[in-house]
Length: 205
Image 1: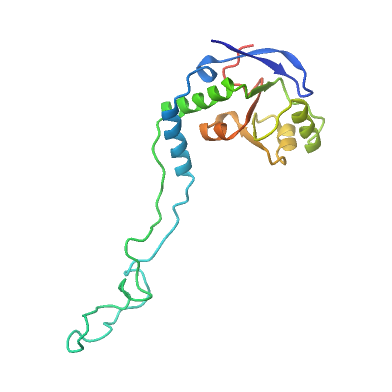
Image 2 (image 1 turned 90 degrees about the vertical axis):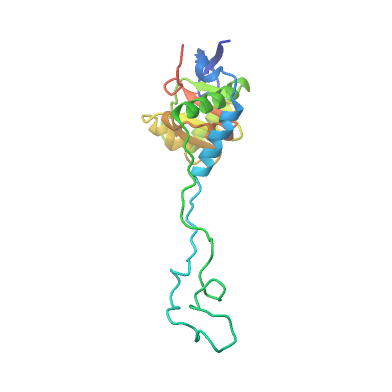
């Protein structure tokens, strides 16, 4: 099954049609791989910077608190042992990485699954090009209204779309990404995916 979309203009009109690559936008979404890759992406975003000190790292406690025998109390070697106030922490968190290894094939399959899901939901828009006289947020907002886009919008832009990038970047509902930065999690978090003719992967006019 081939998916054909109208090639839109920023004023809301059409400038022909464009065919989406079936390998990217026409597969059956693999939910299992999507779950693994998204989980790995979220895990990689965790800082893992929590840190507690062990009894070896807490300052002080070098002298034996009291003699070994004759006091009737349990023997102690340091007031920085975990049972004392101000002592070290047992099995506390240490700096670590939460990253999970995901191979390239899984990443690509997850991305294709996410893009296919958005295409099947008719949430993919292709614009021929952005034509702004200058970087104006007002013009960018007008373009979104002309295209009837609302909610969370992912704009896939190229390096030479500098005016468009500066026009859209102040809109809180718009996320700007380069084509090479596309990933499954961000695609799934977006209500609309907007490409240009230049940034649409595997475009067939």
